[in-house]
Amino acid sequence: MSAQQRLSNIQQHIENSAAASIFSDVPQAPPDAIFKLTAAYKADTYDKKVNLGVGAYRDDDGKPWVLPSVKMAKRALLENEDIDHEYLGITGLNEFTSSAAKLILGSSSEAISEKRVSSVQTISGTGANHLGAVFLNKFYPFDKAGGQRQIYISNPTWANHKAIFNSVGIKPVDYPWYDAKTVGLDFEGLTKTLKEAPKQSVFLLHACAHNPTGVDPTKEQWKQIADLFEQQGHYAFFDCAYQGFASGNLDEDAYSVRLFIERRTIPVLVCQSFAKNAGLYGERIGALHIVSTTPERAAAVTSQLSVIQRSEISNPPAFGARIVTMILNEPKLWDQWQKDVTTMADRIISMRKSLHSLLVEKYKTPAPGGNWDHILKQIGMFTFLGLNEKQCALIVNEGHIYMTSNSRISMAGLTTKNVEYVASWIDKAARS
Ligand SMILES: Cc1ncc(COP(=O)(O)O)c(C=O)c1O
Image (cartoon, rainbow, N blue to C red; front, side, top):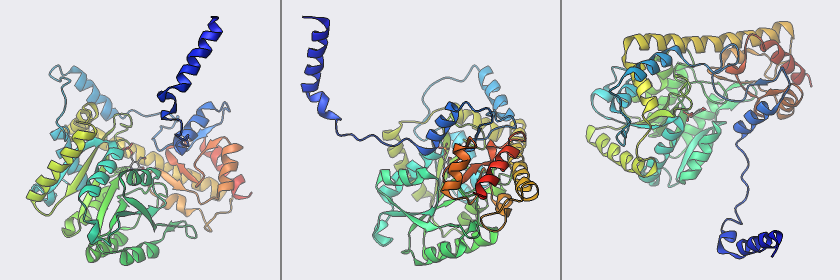
């Protein structure tokens, strides 16, 4: 038998086996839009190409930035011979979860001092959203909320929210957030939905620096939103991925979360990520905090979160937790971290000013909502330009500037060297 014949016999044998038919009906899934964009950017050889797709901070040379506070913590960890590589507990490193809770809820939080908070270390913000979703799916009284197993999410929102809730069997339902006419908040639409949704509905809120729109409520509007949550008995599922990134001030960016919790009568859950504000994207470090009305309920909630966590990841990774714990607890590192967060927020704010002035003063570019002030007003890492899909495609295909088709750009991808080039293409697109 020739080698060719033998190979053909083997192939025939495999084709006839049970193994061959097992995944034969699995359809090819589409690639993730953001990761696809990054791959296209990397493959592009054009020297002026710009990546405004991914939500990760870059310095003014367009390079990833390791925060000086993180460098200091890593150095200290390396020198500490007492650190071993044992498993953490199921809910993570206790020093990490307790200091992370203080960071988001406030150091004088009554919920913490009264032991009403269940805090669990998670696989970054995504893991916190997932664990929160699984917990709600198991224990939330959806029968009291109109009988529908659903969560209200802003339209638009971080694309993964839909996928996360769908994957656990909770249906995501849109509520209005973005008003294309004003390129701002659709406050009327939002409050109408809060009033009309069944009592005790679950609403997901971005704590600050809304992704993808950069549109946040004012403090006065947050108070009105909290009033409606109180009146309607809604559940607040806060996602906080950008604390410190919005204003450069960690306390200021926790305003909405603390406001709701201080009311005491609004049930609240908070997902917290250290990917962006500590630049620890790959370490996957975050936390889920669920606030209960009594310490006994909080203890029961923690026990159930442990049961879920055990079957999903057994226990979370240690490295990022140790870095963040040092930053949050050692005065020198803490001071440096405040500076680092301010450095990132300030660079983003200065890019907003540059882009705005180029479009308004240099190019006199026609604006979708009448003016370009939304570039200055929008908060955090992202700006929603307000351009249509065709205009975005022109910027990507002809300008080699990579951005999502909903006109979201990451301000962290702009630098003093590329902002003029980007402005010139926004100008071309807006006139097309
Ligand atoms: C709104 C929002 N939530 C959660 C996350 C989760 O990020 P990570 O899992 O990297 O912490 C992100 C990241 O882009 C986000 O924008």
